Image (tube, rainbow, N blue to C red; front, side, top):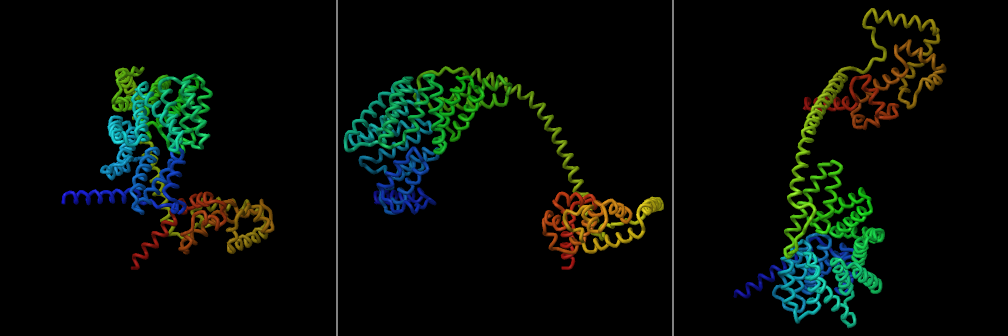
Length: 580
């Protein structure tokens, strides 16, 4: 009974994992009719070249496996999906964990060893080397005398792990074994091109780590040739990058930069942040060695931003922080100096926590005591600067508060003027004479004008101006004293003097007051007009822009059209409420 219960529970958990694996994923129409072999070939073709596409094919394999209830498809889908997501710097662990759980009681030539392999790879990418090693050892035990492909592939993975912990001499024989196995397999019907080319790169990289750069270049050349021969470019960018690194250490800086720059776009497209960080680090080193310090610093900063893009850090890039610290120290930039000192502390903490098997002592220019002293010095300098900064911030805050006060006061004035405008009937074009002194001044102006203008002509122009006002011709655009004088059968000077005589203002004031007086009444009486934009209203009454309209409105009324419209709307809403 207990055995039956465990079987049921395992089946339930499998179905749960299957249902969660591809949540929200729908197979594209172009892939619906593809069989497993076609999808696998498509995945292999783009794997490590276009990892987003690889993830698409893996998802499709998994979805088809669920639909057809084919366990082999499901296992392969989980494996490939975990691997592709890991290459995209995304979390592949849920898929690897699902694969481990659903294959733990299976005993064939692939599983559960393959599930432990992918879990180990993901842990290795997370710098969790001890945990990765545990899975590799278990997988090696499961594959021994059962699956030679897995057994020798695990030698490669062990070599990668040893390389990550700087045990490069011990890693090289493992890569050689794997390469010889894959090379011999190419002479059989069971050849695996992708694994064979991958073994060449592993060997090239190991020679580079052991500072045998000429041997590394030999295998880079072989690898690039084999990529072209078999039309498999999975590892092509890795060979080019390895070539660039070898050229750097051989001091062929121009060739090194050319190789590295040539693969930048591919790494960016694939979001391969770890390798991008290394690429920018070496471009920084190349520029630093060729005395292009500013360019070098730019690349080191880009390397830094990518080093921690996925909470990862690549130890090889460590001395880039030393260069950055020195660079900003020489320039007196304490903030940047402190920032990269902290980054170096963090980098060292990752290195110390990750290198579980590293027995060699690392001697660095900036050891912890020196870094702590430097950090304290920088913080002291920053504290002195902060006192000045706080005073500047305080003064700035006072200024901002004053400006806010002025702004709010002005808004209040605008609103008060707008409310007052509601109670009037507009702007009087000819202001009443308030006292004797003003009357005497106007009489003087009138007498002076009459000496210049004949009564007959003045009366004639007065009638024409009244007609101009009654017909609302002042709403036309681009009216000038020249154009209006021509329409009224006179000249500009005579028109200007007549307006001064009849209206006690110049032509521009006269035209603006006509327009503003008109729109005040129109807005008061036409609710629909209030919904127009200020720009549309300006255009309707002859202004070329909303700014010129607003300026004229403010000059004449003491407020802005937007505030006047708001007062009208508030007044309408209030009256509506009162009536209810």
